[in-house]
Length: 421
Ligand SMILES: NC(=O)c1ccc[n+]([C@@H]2O[C@H](COP(=O)([O-])OP(=O)(O)OC[C@H]3O[C@@H](n4cnc5c(N)ncnc54)[C@H](O)[C@@H]3O)[C@@H](O)[C@H]2O)c1
Image (tube, rainbow, N blue to C red; front, side):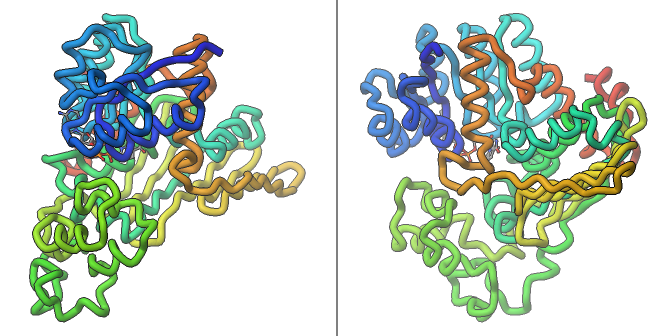
């Protein structure tokens, strides 16, 4: 296999997760340049990938002023900083690994798709679930016809109460105007995976949901807006941030709190006194939903319902009903069962449990996407998990359509919705 080179734009949590593949597989990939606005991230990139100083750039604009420096670009900046670097990189001739959401609105997603056609570039959107052993197994079971033709699907995304509080109440994805609505920021993975396993485009979509819990009405009487201001509920509150961010040393979000790689407990406590993660979860400027349902109809008549909820430990569950059998799949246990209507037998598939290290993050999806990417960009071999950018774009429209439905209280016909963009 040909060794490929990449530049990383945005060396934060996600940029580092994908770049880790080059550290683990130096014979297959090397990171040759990095752009990030934070000095300590550039220092870390320099150390991790042995990058010379003239290949470290402070902003994405600086890196795209250079001629093409590598085979492909990894774009892992925040949601509002995908469109311009993506289009500029494609113009320069880079293929792309582009973080989801492609962009924050349907028009910009369309512009990215059109640029990929114009410049003839390959783009993989980081819908990492497609690249996990779990979802690959589900797709293969359906493609082998084990449950027959999919008739309906129930899918649930349990975000997890602490994940919700960190990312969607206090953190980067709390506000739909600053980042994206929940259905795009978090559940665009679920829209994509449901369309992929059902195997047909979604035609109609409808949604309900709101912020019912994480709001001012639920703030206990006498609780200060900032937890570090002697909150009388500190002992009993599960969201008390000093305990949450300092006592659990493996907490993947520790560095986010102080915006510093390898932050100490003291730096975290200091950051909690003034920063967003020290705020009472009932007194933040969050507006993204804490629970949502989406109903869908796919071409050919398959129907599906999706629930996203904050109020759980976390994990995804799925049931898919076909005309020959039904499937039950639990991403927490990695157990998939298939009941066959004719034989009346239940077959259990148990996948090897993947430890959650940075290199096997997202249940193996982060490594899986890099492996398939190298085959696709380097050898032009597309695995079943790879899809066209048009498909990714249309699957993003499911999220935008669902949000339109939720806000306008109507059923959205996705063909009409797409024609308006
Ligand atoms: N695929 C997934 O499952 C998944 C999971 C989490 C996040 N995401 C997405 O990945 C993206 C990045 O998320 P993250 O958690 O890594 O965020 P992050 O904040 O950790 O990383 C973003 C990086 O971009 C850098 N940056 C800011 N301005 C810049 C500029 N002008 N030029 C270059 N770099 C700049 C920041 O300093 C930071 O290091 C987001 O779009 C997010 O929605 C995807």
